[in-house]
Length: 122
Image (spheres, rainbow, N blue to C red):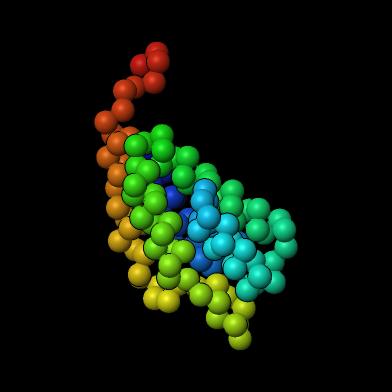
């Protein structure tokens, strides 16, 4: 599960730089709309943004990390802005949401290590 957590962290740290957003909530829709408009995106970009956050939300739910997910989502929603001249949707400080991201990833990692084995001993 370490690989999954590392991959999730890599995706999470690049969210503000790609066509992604904060899935599952009013803040998510606003975040994705603002990002899409800022970057001259399309409806597909907006939908991809929502789906990316929704996917992360579902993973967090499976591992019992809903609160940690919400903290990360809220951080991205509250601290992102449109760098208008460059048309990039960024965090006000690249490290501002690092702690909530790491806490979420740790929650998933710890929970995955405490899960029962797959049926058949896998």
